[in-house]
Amino acid sequence: MTTILEHGQPIKMPAEAVARAIINQLPLFILDVRNSSDYDNWKIEGIRVESVNIPYFDLLEGVDSALPLLPTDNRRVLVVCAKEGSSQFVAEQLVALGLSNIYFLQGGMKAWSEHLEPVRIGALESGGELYQFVRLGKGCLSYMLISGGEAAVVDPLRMTDVFEEFAKQRGVQIKHTLDTHLHADHISGGRRLAENNGANYWLPSKDAEDVTFHYHPLDEGNQITVGNTRIAIQPIYSPGHTIGSTSIIIDGKYLLSGDILFVESIGRPDLAGNASDWADHLRTTLYDKYRALSDELIVLPAHFGKTTELGEGGKVSARLGDLYATNPGLNMGNEDAFRLAVTTNLPSQPHAYQEIRKVNMGFIQPSAEEQREMEIGPNRCAIHD
Amino acid sequence: MKIDVHVDTKGLACPMPLVKGKKALDKMLPGQIMELVSTDKGALNDFKAWVKQSKNEWISHQESNGVHTFLIRKG
Image (cartoon, rainbow over the protein chains, first blue to last red):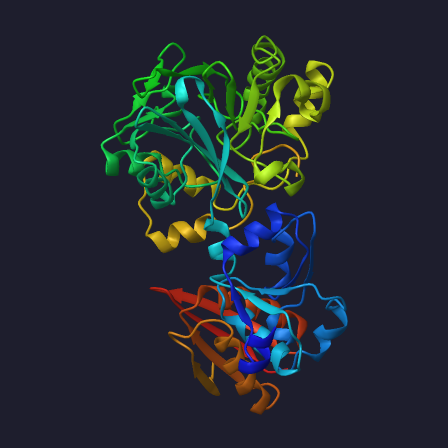
């Protein structure tokens, strides 16, 4: 507080601090100054986050019109825009009017989209550990399994340096990177992470028919081991979101369900081709194949849609048996009702999803800035918004 | 089409393209045309959204090698 009064400047808040506030359910008021269509499409959300949208171009001649919308209690006010400049511009004017507790988001929504928060999921047999990396801004989840000095990364995101740094800190070598399917909402870091670390890149062969690069087939029956303690990664063919979608059982305890099963929804079958062709695969996977697995498995999906899905410390997980009771996607009645629900009235597709698939197949190599731009927005991989 | 006012905002990030564009339009007469050049991709959608709710009129947009040129008629 004194800092603001002495310097008359708003405080720059990094994405990491916003992530902490959301995970710890601290109150935060957001003044989002992007244009309204960008705001309606995608914004920062949290259980105790309240936000309003006033485009910065309506505040160029003064921020007085924003004042009645700001909180009267002592909550922190975070001004947010796409990159940073406009939020700083507005935040400075608020401070100039004598307001305190004014922050702006460092790097804007671009930085928010790229922030990853590592959360420990639990121990594995023989001393290994499993971590989840939560990308709050886009709702993506990656995993790192560590055992005996080695690591495997499942569904790694484009920000490969985060995984490399994490592995380095723990003194482990990344030996395997795996994609549970060909992603359409984000650019996979799997191939680059493997290349940088001399690791093997695994991708389901049915999703890799057109790819331009070498990969190891992540197919049922091909078991992968990590470390000398033999932590087993067991692939389970589970088509539906894509034809190659493959789930992974780790240590007989964790089910990495990719984009097939989420905590509050199920994967959509329309992003990689024909929804109606794959709707039946999706049903068989969820209602027969998964049903035959142990209820005690801990489901660890590749996405979440709402911040209500975040649990303790920000982790996203659920017991498989519990999801059969609570997840609407697992309680859809007969085949016809299911088919209708997963093929009609779906939310809009993820931003640039066709181009993102091309990047993940190796057809196009956009620049880092173009890749960042392609990934703007929420993941939208579930059938429910 | 006769361009009355040129505004070059190349290299500037938000909010400057809009700040400069708006300032220029404020000094123009109704019916005059402003050409604004920007290298900030985000400025395009923001300008469109702003023009829509103002009395001004959006005429056109062109992009070439990352340089966006748009024409706005003062309302």
